[in-house]
Amino acid sequence: MVVGTRSELWARAQRLIPGGVNSPVRAMRAVGLDEPMFVRRADGAYLEDADGARYVDWVQSWGALLFGHADPETIEAIREAALDGTSYGAATEREVELAAEIVEAIPSVEMVRLVSSGTEAAMSALRLARGFTRRDRVLKFAGCYHGHVDALLAEAGSGVATLGIPATPGIPGAVTSHTIVCPYNDLDAAAAAVARYGEGLACVIVEPVAGNMGVVPPAPGFLDGLRALCDASGALLVFDEVVTGFRVARGGAQERFGVRPDLTILGKIAGGGLPLAAFGGRADVMQELAPTGPVYQAGTLSGNPLATAAGLSVLRRLRDPLVYDELERRAARLQAGLDGHGTVQRVGAMLTLFCTPPELGAVPIRNYALVRDRADAERYGALFRHLFDRGIYLAPSQFEAMFVSLAHGDEEIDRTIEAVESFRA
Ligand SMILES: *Cc1c(COP(=O)(O)O)cnc(C)c1O
Picture 1 (cartoon, rainbow, N blue to C red):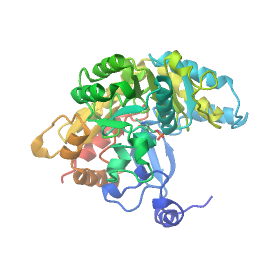
Picture 2 (tube, protein in one colour; picture 1 turned 90 degrees about the horizontal axis):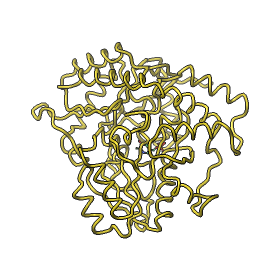
Picture 3 (cartoon, helix red, strand yellow; picture 1 turned 45 degrees about the vertical axis):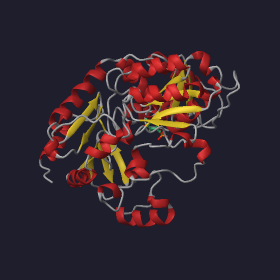
C-alpha cells in the first residue's frame, strides 16, 4: 500500500481527480481549509487521518453509520458474505430478507426495490411516479437535496449551496422545466403551486425532516398538508428518507410524524455503510416497475451480497426500542450542551448548530432562505477550524447535520461541548 502524508496525497489527488475529491462535499474550502481530510482508518466514534491525527467524527459517512465505524457485527457479516462471492447479478435470499426488514419497519412501504445509491433511488422513484401517474411535473422544496438527479438539482441545498453554485451546467432546460420549487414549510405556496399545476403533477417530493440545508424540522401540519394536497390532485407524495429513515425513528419521519407517503426513498443507514439504497411504497405503484409493469429500472450491483449483509446486520438490531431511547438521550445531551452557542435544531439523532449572530439569540430557522439569511457561514468556518484543531470533526459546511450514533458516548459528547464552549469569534 502507498502511504503518503496528507499533503503528499493532496498534491497527487489534485492531479488525478477533479478537485482532489470524489464528492464535492469532502472539500474543505467552504470552511477555510485548502486541503481536505484524507482518512486512513476509523473505529467507533473516531476517524484517523493520513497523518495519524484522531478526530471525534460527527459526520459518520453523512449519517450512514448508526453503530459507528468498523462496527464488529457489520464487519463480520460482510466478511462472511464475501467468502461466498461478492456479486452474482442474480437473486439471493439476503435481498428477500432485507426487503422484509424494510417493509416491516417503514409504515407505508409494502414493496421495495434495492439499488446502489440514494441518487439512483430518487431518480427511479421520480420515474416511477411519472410512469404511474402519466404526468411529468414534480414539486420540490428549496434546500432539499435528493441526490444529483437532473430534474431535482434546482435549489438543492447541501453541496450545491456550500459551493455557491446557482445552477448546474449540463442539465437541459427541458429537463428542469417540469420542476416546480417552493419554500420549505410553506404550505400556502405549495397549495398555490398545486392549484396552478396540479393536473400535470406527478409527485411532490420532500425531505420530511430537511437535513441538507442543516436540520429544519417540518412545521406542524406541513407534512399532513402535503398529504392532503396530493390526495386532492392525484399526485403521489414521495418522502426522501435517505437520511431520516431508521434515524429519527425506526420507521423514519413517517413514523415519527404519522404521515403516510405513497413512495419512500431510503439509503445511508439502510446499507450499513455499504453502497445500498432503496425505494418502495404502495404495492399498486411498485408493480408498475419492470418486469411486472412497463417502467424500466435495473442495476448490475443492485441487492449486492455484501451490501445486503451489512444492511441486514444493522436493521435487525433496530427492532430493539432501546436503540432509539439511547440515541434520543445522547442527542439531547449534545443539544443541551450546544444550546446558547447559536441556534440548535434537532429531530432525534440529527441536529445542526446554526451559527446565528449572538445578538439574534436562538431564532427558529424554518426554510432555506432563512438559513442563508441568518446562519453565518464565515463564523461556522471559524468554529469548524477551532474544533478540527482540537480533534473534533464536524461536516465541513454549515448546510449539513451532526449525526449522533451509538458509538458516541458521553465522553465524546462532553468533549465536543467543551470545545464549542471554548470558541470565541
Ligand atoms: C445523501 C442523500 C441523497 C443521495 O444519496 P447518495 O447515496 O449520496 O446518492 C438523497 N437524498 C437525501 C435526503 C440525502 O441526504
